[in-house]
Image (cartoon, rainbow, N blue to C red; front, top):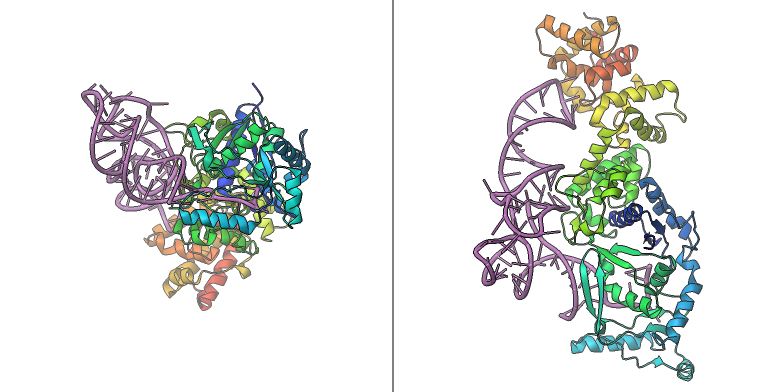
Length: 529
RNA sequence: GGCCCCUUCGUCUAGCGGUCUAGGACACCGGCCUUUCACGCCGGUAACACGGGUUCGAGUCCCGUAGGGGUCACCA
């Protein structure tokens, strides 16, 4: 049996979106599972310049996800080139063969004329089929049409009766009536070739054994089969995946409807969270490309590729009734086309988020450090490279934060550990609530003196000191802890309070308490005891 | 409109005639834990689109209906 070869064929117009990632993943998994190759082919038949530039986010996306390609851009391979724009001679040769074999013909209809026929058919309520009125079967005819000032394209001469049958690995046996098919144009007047032709030629020349693609292509399959058979190519195994639907809808997910998705609350939440990270990095948010349906979004915000992959894997495929988590190895081992679902699955930002949390919690401290450091550097909170004591501090923050950090960019939730007392921002509301009255100011002033004498200044001793202090006064811990928190971190929420103080350190803690008290206008009380 | 496809909890799904008073996960609700936040733990609500068949027996097979969707380019 021939080596399994699959391909993913992005068009360098857009960005890699969730649906594309899934198609790519399934192709990749299938190839890896069968010890075959995964090929990346660039469908740029209709593209002009800047292909390399437009391609970069897509390739970066693949690299980030860990989906490596055996042949394609940058790695090349024995059957290249892998850009359709560089393969025109292959397509041209195929067109000649089709023409010679009588499977295609030169056509000289003007677009308006086709349009008229189409309109007439529509008016009559029947399916449109080109009359072939301007078909040139001989060179003489062609010349005659040319003299009329017409330009020739090449059309497929599709069968007019019979049935096209093929087996789809996901959907089972398929049947289409040939008479439903159009005489599609495969080559324009300027000699450039169209997608379907190029696609079939490339799939053959790249020795693709399994065409795994979105269901949108299902109805294109008969014409591609016609081309392949006319050219004498063996047919690949087809597998048409259901499309990925919009959040809380059954419509196909589209990268052109991003604005609309933003109105969906869960989607919006994911977006807002990402936007906050970006803003802290000082980057501008481009709503056209920075969107939770595009992989770039997740990469920029610091999600884990593993989470995205695992989520996407389960969008239309399941192994059994209980396995939820798969690492790459397990995915490869478990994947099969037979278990791909037929019905569309809608993209659920909340579930994706839960996978992200899960994988984040699996990370070791060093792995979290590796993930978050770049964000601190980009935000300008740390230098590049960071000094050892800053790395150590970040590691301690990470340890204290535990699962509060859900994505890499969440480290930027903790500016209080990267600024000095003078620059500490305050959450005014929290400050007022916890330190707005004379009584709490007084207590904080008194407790600060305990802190000043505490040695060693670590979480354990801080906690016992505070417990002892409230015991003596016979008050609840809530009477003091919130005030300390807001004074030292500037906020009402955050890490465990004692860990936070330990990280900030004694000197800095005392300075911050002084500043906080001064800020709320309690400076005159500082000398009291 | 023609052709084609799809239909189990809110969402992703398991189920391939009896083991289904339908299982899991996420979300949601309630409780516990708790210095905030987050986590964790325990418990709960919630689905076979509808109508006919076939069968001793149907979520599972067949046919209709309804709903949803895809596709009909000199785009890919």
